[in-house]
Length: 244
Image 1: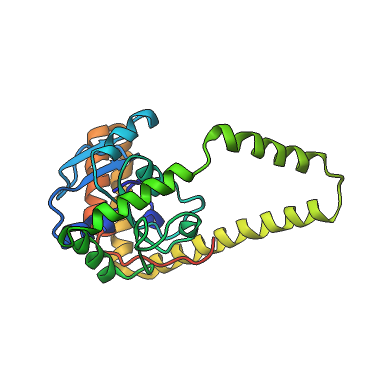
Image 2: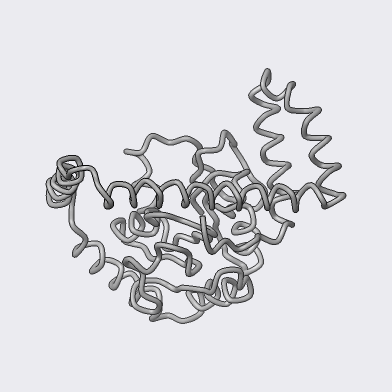
């Protein structure tokens, strides 16, 4: 698993719970959250420098990445470059390079039984994992590197900057404003739904009492993040997002 705890659309704690349900023998967590251990997880890698993450990927066979919304869906591609494959939701961005049954397994967003079944297939079908990792390696090899993409990106930015003011630039400004407002509306709707849940109101009050103390104590902060993920995030069914 890769991703931060406490970010609902990254869906990390719930992913750990599904991996346990599938009977995965060894689970690793690569996270930006300041935690040192997590129940059911064999190894936790917290806040590693980016240059050190590839060694973690190379030590694993499968990345379980169940984000509910993404932009450029990067971690599975990183896993492909490091010799593994992935199980993902059909989240925004996955179709740029992920092909179901060719280089990874893709499950409909929110289909948790499908996730468990996919993980069990990888464990039980002898030829599946090698086939997917071979496909993933081909995808990674064909992906443009920085030397190829950076000049193209610079050219595109230069063309935008050089374009005269007009309808294209105004349309870009309006589109950017609308996309951001969609994100704000989605976040506000999720927060309103959480406020209506009585058990979440109680949990929020308890969390508020601990936050001040946690800021002064790194050890307490680590425990608080872990407890919250274990008792709240693992049990909260994720709300699928189709827009941001």
